[in-house]
Length: 368
Image (cartoon, rainbow, N blue to C red; front, side, top):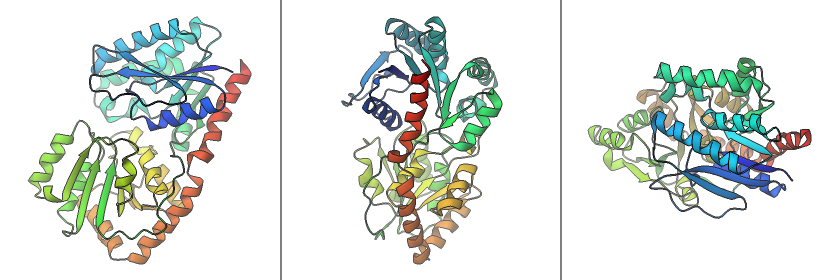
């Protein structure tokens, strides 16, 4: 069976998406290796059915990191021949593409986890954006195999790069959720990175407009964590806002199961967020937790099909608080959302989605 090497720039320990993908491919008979980077504070790797390897890097961020990592990855690929290189996102695509050109027996498959050239960290730096856009415009049109995380992005990428993109959504494994959901406390939950553009400042400011019974739990860590803690103090809601820091994937359900409402409040600061389909939206669904999503195309489409969200038109504290209070005052509406999530969870799970992934790699393997 074909040897597949998947490449990412993270340290592997928190990448549940790639763990699912690599485990599925390994179970299908492929020989899979996941390659990321070693950081000073990286947790020990957990054992999985596939192989894992971390590349040590001197630089931790910025242009020198990307240059160093791409050179190290190219050298690793040169020393470790494989049949298929799965480049996850634009920041690992160059070495994967080059090795596929150097070794004619190697196929490059592109996995666009996001609209990389339109993430806020890139769009606010036009020179950097031009570099990444030039790279994408050069390589992606030459690729035969590519996929992304949602139908909207697939359409955009297919039109922009004249390359057909498949869709493999970032949905979790089916889990057993509580039969009934009527939490005694009103816990608002956000799970994920505490980075810019996640609408967390809005969530904290909305707490000031909500009764004392409401609590906000932010599960995760990130670049703006300290700023968010300071904001909670300034807004005088720090006693009702909890920062858990990083938690392991097996610890996460203990927080999700106590949530009354999930939050996914991406700011419209770039097309990547506007066309996103975040995994946390599906995590809330799997736990039968109603959630607030922005009224962006992918969430609107899911709402039209399943009716499992509260959609927010404007990311403003007042509007968010009003939606929350309306839901709290209407238990029948809340319970209907719970039941709609329960029904959606039957479809939106990895057990169904993984076949899309296997179909793509079966086509790649057959073409070799």
